Amino acid sequence: MSEERIVEALRALAESDRDRGASPEVETHLRQAFRRRLAARPWKRAGLLWATAGATAAAAIVAGIVLFSGGRKSPVAAPSVSAQVQQAAPVVEPAPPVSRPVRRPARVRPAMPRELATDFFPLTDVALPFEHGEMVRVTVPAATMLTVGLPVPEERLADPIQADVLIGEEGLARAIRFVRLQQ
Amino acid sequence: MTVSDHELLGRALDGDEDSFTALYRRRQGAVFRFALQMTGDVVVAEDVTQEVFLTLLEHGRRFDTARGTVASFLYGIARNLVRRRIEKERVTEAEATTEEFAGDEDLLEDLTRRETIHQVRRAVLSLPAAYREAVVLCDLQDLSYQEAAEALECPVGTVRSRLNRARAILAQKLSSAARSTR
Image (cartoon, rainbow over all chains, first blue to last red):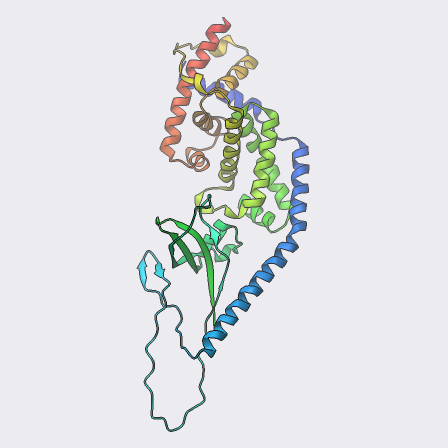
């Protein structure tokens, strides 16, 4: 039998199925499921607000400890490694030259950048055991957040954002979190 | 102006039920037919259709325009669900390549239209899953090779070769069917 005949026979089958579809009950069930999900959303939003507030509070506490301990830290400076991957190791800036101590001006503390970070999202389907690893800071397009289910406005999909990627001993990226610096 | 699938999906995920319903009504037929033609079972096809759209609600944010269309995304979900069903129900796939080729140009003249459709459906259902997917998507759902490749997450060349092989197997099967009805 020629291929043309086969294609013709398949077309006949496709034609016979052309108007088939799921029963109206399926649509009814799905719309009910949609409404249930929508109704459950305020709780999720509240959870997100609490999580954000918690992260902000944690960042404020960390910033406070750094300020009152007298140490001076610089923002994370990450050397470029490859393909926009940057190491997260902080680099301490050299101290500024000290002028003559005639009168000590009021000390103006530099604004500390605060990091707001999401939770870590797993990048592997299976939860592999994790003992040692490394965290690297990378710059990724905001669209990456979609892959873990975080919403991103369409017009901002291409915006670069910072993320910390947790890499296991075997070199596999295990988890990712997204970071925002606030002055 | 027609609203794109992508736009409807975005609105649905933001809580717009009308957009979700519009997207469902636009795409459910194709998803249902894909599942039906893959399994031959109307009940399973309905279950799969429902699960596909539930999955879309749950994981729709994972849709990436760079990787294909919403339709391909839906076919991809449907494919995974169908495969799970097939494995669960242990559908036999082994008999696909054992029959001899016998050129029979008069098959369509020999069978009534209805019988032909029945034979073709049976022949498609007996194909190995990978070949069946290619035939269902390209020949029955009329997707381009590119769209099928996106849904199957494989290169276009693989779709072409699977389709050629599937058609050759179908030719064997339908020729045998024609002989046995004489």
